[in-house]
Amino acid sequence: MSDPLEPDRPLVAIDVGNTRIKLGLFERRADRRWPECREFTAIPRSGSVPWNLLARWAGGEMLPTVIGGSHPAIIEQLQRDWANQRWPAPLVIRNFTSLPIDVDVDVPERVGLDRLLNAVAVNEFRPAGTSAVIVDAGTAINIDVVNPAGAFAGGAILPGLALGARALHEYTALLPWLGPEELRGDAPAAIGRNTRAAMQSGLRWGFAGAVRELVQRMTAETGLAHSPCLVLTGGDGGLLTEMFPEARYFPSLAMHGLALCAWHRNEERASDV
Image 1 (cartoon, rainbow, N blue to C red):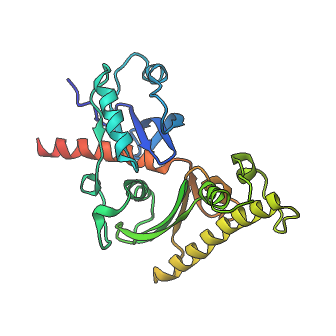
Image 2: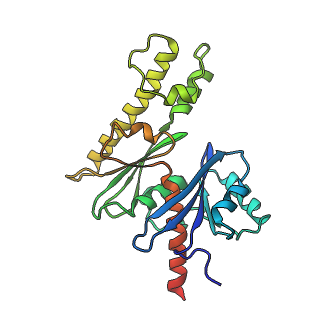
């Protein structure tokens, strides 16, 4: 029987975030290592696994699955769910020791797995000898650096758009709650002429300005003459593409990292035989 993680077989990658669970079907072409996302869906963190949808993706096969992310309790629940199905037991990526990347920070075991998975993915296309800056704009915004040697070198964490809106509403007496369509719609005017418009401006342009400032400072701190490879990802990453036209944008970069980790695990097993 073939190894379920061999690179010529499709696999399902599941990224468990703080707000959503993202599921994708990935394949790797024979002429390149990069995992191609063929199918994608996302469910709320408290949602049920869409087994019927996964079965359609699989086309009658019981595909291998790799799971990882930033919410350990939900990952454990997913692993229990898999035990009740006919699908093979998933590969669960739990910590940095399972990843094909060096982690050059003070306390590697405390770095969020989602940040490291992004870095694993970026190393597949980052030009050799070039650093990378990754902007992952989700519930929180992670802005991280991969150094020229390919190691994760740390970064910055700040609140995301929705988290900022929630804080303004819950920790003030009169400021309203802004829904997703108000936060992520057309770019607002900088000068808001009412409370909601002023909040839209502050949140959206504050978000953009914070990212720009940190990217510029991180670029300066790399100490290199050329600009780093800039990558955008996350649910709100698309809002930044016009500001950073030179950047590459992947809606769910960590899922690509999960697929790469699974195939890397299989390659390690094959080399040990």
